[in-house]
Amino acid sequence: MELTQVRYFVALTRLLNFTRAADACNVSQPALTRAIQRLEDELGGPLVYRERNLTQLTELGRAMLPHLEAMLEAADNASALAEARRQQPVASLKIGLGPGVGAAAIAGAVREVASLMPDLMVRFEEAAGAMLVESMLSDMLDCAVLPADCALPERFNHWKLYDEGAVVVMPPQHRLANAESITASDLDGEVLLHGERCGGFVQALRAACDGMFRVRRCDGGIGNMLDLVSAGLGIAILSERMAVPSPLVTCRLAKPPLNREVRLAAIAGRPQGPAVAGFIKLCRAGCGL
Amino acid sequence: MGLDEQLQAERQRRTADDAVRLAYEDVFTTLSQNGFLSGVLGEAAAFPDFVLPNAEGRLVSLASRLAEGPVVVQFFRGEWCPFCRLMLDALVAALPEIEAAGASLLALTPDMGPWARQAKQNHGATFEVLSDVDYGVGLAAGVVFRIPALYRSRLMRAGIDFAERHGNGSQFLPVPAVFLLDVNGRVAWRFVSVDFTRRAAPDRILGELRRLAAPEQE
Image (cartoon, rainbow over all chains, first blue to last red; front, top):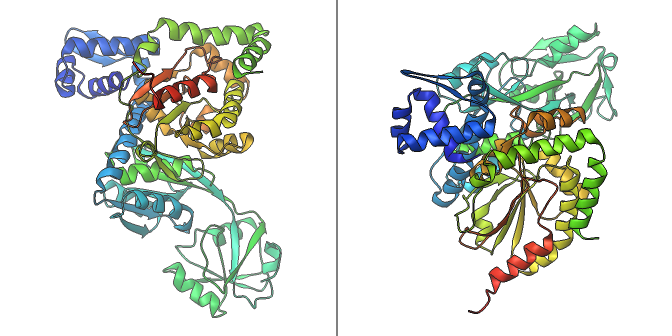
């Protein structure tokens, strides 16, 4: 399969007219027609119906289109990144972080993109899933890292990044600080701090068992809540991937296992700059990191 | 036993099963008849510059490798493929000589990071294994094809989940072509076959590499 064949086919699917597609691709119409025919030979059947005034995709054409679009985008991205490495343009990367999702898990990918484009500007936005979706739709964010239970409209692409479990966060002098792992019953008598940014682990724990713990609402930034944990106001349950400042300690919550899937989401078909394309590519290739 | 003999033996062993033989032939026949080879980047063509993630989650740029010398770009299907495993072992053994000739080796697979890491570890490879996410570089080099139905169902029965390995549901693969690029990024030599049981043995790659480094006097 050739890059130009795929490029011509994708142009044709957008314009549904051979003459206009050929103009848009800067080739003669016979050249475009030949390229589409060769692509059809390779993919094993007609991709378009050619009727007098009507060009329509066949079932095979419709089935192949999203895959060919993704490949074309990947080819263009790989060379755009190479171009950005040479030109070092000013670029930005605006990443949404869903509830309880820290930047630690994706920091390596951001570092790699920045090493290619030293003038990269990075912005994180922490918010609820629905807010992040809104921000992506209004072009305020390039992509978002979200728990899999955040609903996404159909026009979004999403890729699984990793599964994560939960840890209990506590001050170093806490009675459980040296435990190997913790179960729900160990938390009897404790005060659990939780808020909108915590990732819902405390709610999931309450749904899974009738623990004898108390819950205290503490909304706002996670950093502020961790200050309260340091001060002995209570303990927190967060993602195991969340970076926790010392001297706070973490211990795995083994039972019940509060695992969740985290994924990367971006709007399908929206043109991306090289920084965003490189970041998404790194995150996808590094799945399970 | 050299790579060619090992590949031949592996092919004989596997195609003793008629169902496997027919599935292999499905690929060879389809790609021989549909004009696939004419789309593969030829000698003297400029290989498109690229940046791709490696198995360790770093970005690797072709241009930065070319700045240090010729580059061998080897496409492979994945660690699931027995012929690729033999080839990777042979490349690992040949790497010191490739590097001694001033070149570097980049191995590109459509598999995502965890499987690229697994391939590196299983073979003790120190060359870069890059994830060609969504086959972008493979498409630009013309080496990507849609897996024919019979072979696809054979692989599915063998439990190979491309949707997971490739991070997409497209069901495409590269032919395991190899491109030797001169320092200007042009294809000095290439080996490509629709028969994925045939590979360029490292001796051939090394021979071409030495010829590139010291062209015969006219």
